[in-house]
Image (cartoon, rainbow, N blue to C red; front, top):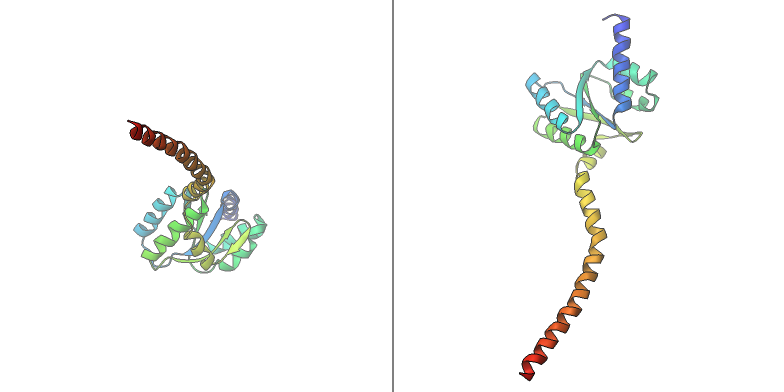
Length: 173
């Protein structure tokens, strides 16, 4: 590949880095083409993509175009692939780590989320979090719970009044 082609490749990866909400670096040595394809399909469902990239191109893209990702350049060793998450970064992280459990040849090295370098242990903690929809449901449930309790108390008063009146009616008849 000539210099102009490499520059275009570097720029395209720099654009992907800037568009993504999170980046995960994984070493894929030992995976078959079918396994990598399976990973790509699973990540596509999570609004993410897996791209194999040359280390030198990735380092150049990070160092010259995306300054906030400079910490990641240390992880560009060996045959690496980048997971670019465009949607929910926790869902993409969960997908990658679940795939890595079943395929030990995929080794997650590091990540970058919200402007900070993230270790493998932190990625595992993020993957253990519930999904965004579940968290929103829990928040709504917490907000509605006091109102439900108050409604139950108010209904209980009127229900007890009706029961007392029925008891008086039954006693008199």
